[in-house]
Length: 171
Image (cartoon, rainbow, N blue to C red; front, top):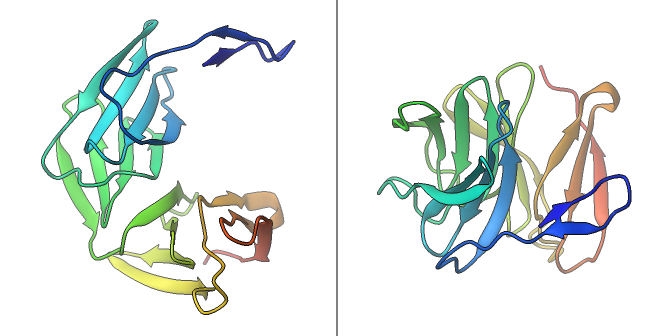
């Protein structure tokens, strides 16, 4: 949907052909909107008023979390993938992430990501360090967002029906 921010009205609805589970969205610096489709293993892009399949590379398996900046699209699967926005070449940055839901790149180059089961991680190089585990509490973690000026990690949950905030200061 394209929504007018001034009055909150829907101006236009955009159909994604053959989509099965549109999941996350991010905007590139040029205004391109990227959308992950977890069930079809595709990344779609809304550019110049049209929605198109941007990539269906075999490395993209169950994509969810997306982050775009500086000519790169970061894709959360069971890995953190980096795709070049011009060439669409993909490389693995971090392996064995366990199914990423939310993905955010921090100013220091580290990634903050969540797993649906109830875990939050930060990367250090190619390693993932667990920051939070709420699996035993049955508090699933959905997407994740970091507020730098406040050093807060914001986490919407599924089963707990809440948005939780945790204090965290990156290295």
